[in-house]
Length: 330
Ligand code: PHE
Image 1 (cartoon, rainbow, N blue to C red):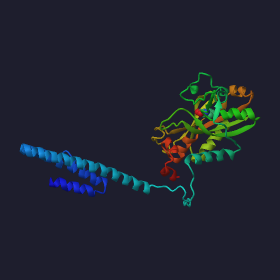
Image 2: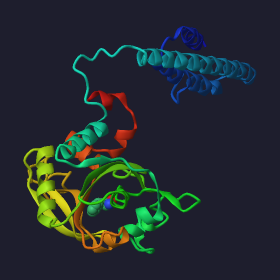
Image 3: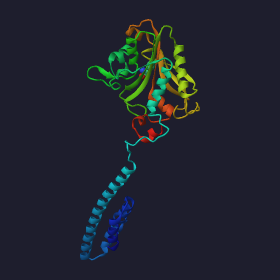
Image 4: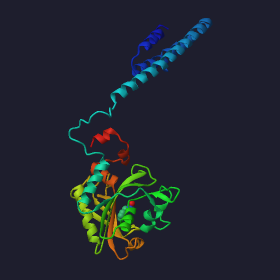
């Protein structure tokens, strides 16, 4: 009983959660003081046994109550200390002397915009809410194409939708301008998707050139120059692909910037990274906007993808979590 009394007194004075837990184990643990005391009961006479058992039970109750109170108080205190230590005063003047590059997505976007506008591409912004015609049917995406499926597209009640790519800006440009057209469109796009490589909102850059005599060689030159300017010297590989609004269509890979094609996790040991979709504007698309007989090329790229590759970020979601540690790295 003496040891128990001493433990109770110690409990009063405990100042941290670690010692508190140690004390709890000492008293209430499986091999603790109380268990030991209860085990000793069987050696006592009946009367004394009852009295002593009652005493032990009373002790157990007061120890437990006090322990719970202490724990709550110490936890509150710990939280207080943490909040104090991690406090961010958003009204403080910025003391970073070197300036920052900003959020990696904005930084990447600005670099892409600068590259293309310096080469005569006019910047278009475009609306986030589109109709079926601009997002799909004008782009030669037929009614039953999988890209239209409910699980991919956010629909509104009145047949409007959140654009699933920046390609509708091609249609707007061709409807409102007479060729030659040379534009890029930049902005948010939306799909119903969420995991380490997909977020419901992401952003794309669309490029469109419409003129007479435009051919695939022009497209190759423009994109290979871009990738080399953006990533330093890279090899570029063109793979034949399919998009309903371009013909022929291609996916563009560049040599892995992480392993120089030796093979790594990012390129899944292939040595190549997929970075772009592109192709010559499909004759059906020209027909849909009244520009039959024109030539042109279009390309689309994901800003998050390029930012992840150029800033070495491996979880897409970290762009949107506004974690200061991540942002301060830039
Ligand atoms: N819109 C296509 C996509 O989101 C990309 C693309 C744009 C492909 C332009 C070809 C031409 O995947």
